[in-house]
Length: 417
Image (tube, rainbow, N blue to C red; front, side, top):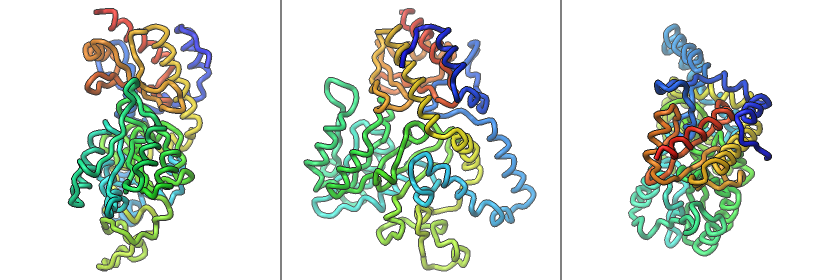
């Protein structure tokens, strides 16, 4: 991509942007007394779609006017409306998807089924520096089986001279230790450095060596192109409040490959996973739904799930190919501007767009002070210890001009030393 280092060029990119009208579908916050906000924190919490208010109002009216009758008229099958649009985002069949619970809850439920330590095959492979909740979940699952994480956890690391992971090294670990690896659970896009790992290749080798292979896609869904069914991924989980813009605490999603839908193995069971034809017979025998829905425990949190419906309508209308295309372009423009204007800033995210999403992780001397200063200037991004500023231009509501203005603010903050 041939970029130019000018405000005029940024404005021109906005003029020809196929998704420029999408910005008007979101509510833009004002978070300081500065003249405007530049919101670059979609990797933590996406902005609110304007349609959320009317979507919630409809459900409140149904509750008001129909009370419990609304359960059978609408809410009983509420989550099912999300299966098709979600399956398009992750590359799966609708039957392989269910929206439920929160991310770490879902990881635990999945590991109950897909981590089955037997003899020497008792280990879990995860990235070192995984999101802490993933680490806690994995270690506690190992302990739940009476095993010691010190013996059963394999962590692959970033390369010594770089800040990101080497896919070849991951595959090598799987090849060399695969006979001992029961389950692979890796963040598809690393929360800290923003790297997109080679999900297809990792899955191929994990399956070849006999391991269950799953991914935490919290930073991947709605951000990068996924094809989970074709790649033969066994299971995955994600949240919906980041790139999917479904609001704080919104329910997460689960993918379970269709080959496991007639499940006979271990699983924590609840009445919403029960065969729909007999669910309300109130019987004591569990006959699980033969889709990903069989892993459900309880009925849908209607008011938490409603904003996701509003957001998914936008994703479904615009399509992931267009969203991914702009995500690549706007983040590449940000890389170009940083390298052109602020050589003091290091980008620890891979610059190759095939190995990243929208998020860029930046390091700079005196980074915490600089982060505080750009925040005071109306920029919303985030800080992750020990030394990273994370910025993520979201293709649905960020403009190229905002990216240009952010780099200017960041440069001024650095020069204020």
